[in-house]
Amino acid sequence: MKLSIFDFFRQKLKGMDAVHRENVVALTIVEMEELENIFALLLFGSFVGFPAPPTFIAVELLPFMERELRILNQRAKDSDDMFAEMCGALGIS
Image (cartoon, rainbow, N blue to C red; front, side, top):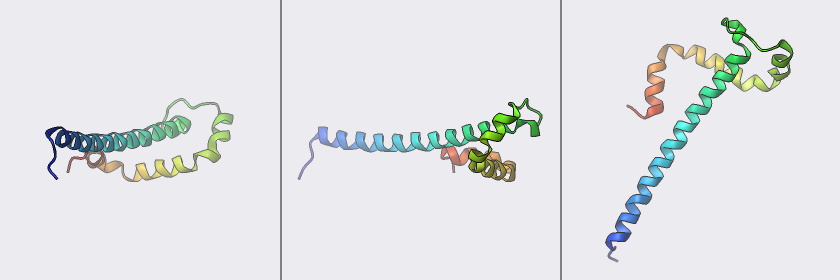
């Protein structure tokens, strides 16, 4: 079956759309992870010298912060290779 020129361009545009959507989702996930890190840093900023929120708020949020604390610890371990992480997030190999 021979495709018309319109069908050909429609297929190409659908492929481009799928690629762009995948890129947007990947960058959104990276942005979400960075926002989680910033949230944890705001709550536990007193460890690095930032003004901290009132203690009772931080203590009430502590049970919900288990995942963020794991991420914060992992980020501290991987902090020596930030350039490679950013290149990986942007798809540069």
